[in-house]
Image (cartoon, rainbow, N blue to C red; front, side, top):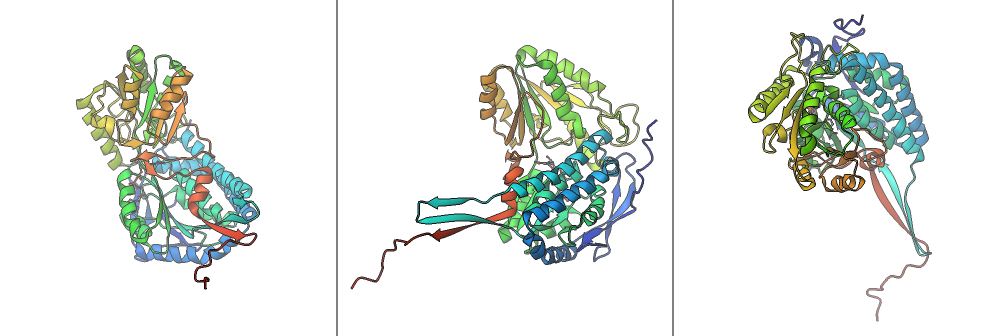
Length: 498
Ligand code: NAD
């Protein structure tokens, strides 16, 4: 039988910064407590970084920059592939740490660990294949692009799927030739404590990656404010993103913002309802519903509305909520008591705004820990707070519609625009709706299946800019254009007339 109560082997009691290749405490000596979401009791103390620690980390990254950025693309790619090897070699430990610290079901944490390794392999391939553009004007001029890494990148990441999202930024930044400072989320620093040994094993030069742990308003803010960091890649909430853009304006930093979502699923009556049901359930309840691209508003065409809502509610009631370490668990524990309380507040609001048809409370068999039975609200009006605001937990809204135009209007009726999903067997309508929905990413007849080459990001309050594939390399590099005259250049001769 699976032991779901013992903490994973090798759990540290102290988590330190990693600066210039050394594990170090904060200059101030301060720490903060880190707890797991099942017992909500601290298991470790992490170094609480501030401006002095960020300053040291930026200095280390600056010192490492000339050598790292001067390497050939193939040499950097070799290091990235060795990082992927080292991640894969720690697959089980990594998944166990992530599951323990964040509450993600272990089977899903394993999938995220695999994706982290894949990110490094993918960006290794990208830079090896990368060329630079050239533009020729007949025999008179040729212009070519020279890409240079931006310098020291500042990476700030959230607590949902923390290790994978860190890899999503680390891999392209390193591939591009940047060195960097990473500030992981304070609720989930455990998996990031494995990066130092991974990077050391892969032979990454000291200082190329530096990790400063700490509270967002202290360590994160210090990174955003540091004049030696010209670029910030941020994934997190919309409010924090806005604040970071305002702070970054002081130094005119380049920023990339991957922010919140309230993604619609538009389900037409002619869709494959079985497939749509599986997809809706997985799309909103996987990763505990703590997923930026969760399809958390399901818009259903009237003729199938009642049947679909009833079946969705039945499935939600049967989703297995349980200890994150149990391989049978489908929804684990929400990351932190503060977040759990916030999600429960939304459930209470939803009970006043709409009809609760599934879940809505802690499963009876789980007396402690941040657990919530997957929750379905039906007949949700579009002005309800649970329709408009990101809940970031296992909670879904269902709303009926009568016409395609109304479906599009409802899909676009929030401030967010990260992902969207359309279910129909009508090819023309699928494309039509895809083009009309305000979103950065849209899937027809599928849940979120990513192709790493494609642009990732949102519109409206869901983000600014795109990462993914070549977009990530564009973000971490500056393009310089060099114009070369190939023949005589016609130049008006000012001042030459007698
Ligand atoms: P958050 O904004 O609270 O925190 C994200 C990170 O920012 C953390 O590391 C935090 O310490 C740091 N931070 C907080 N204040 C800061 C400041 N003043 N200066 C610099 N850094 C600061 O977000 P969260 O609660 O950790 O994550 C959940 C949010 O992330 C959700 O809204 C979710 O949709 C979003 N998210 C978006 C994507 C995407 O790709 N669009 C992916 C995952 C998560």
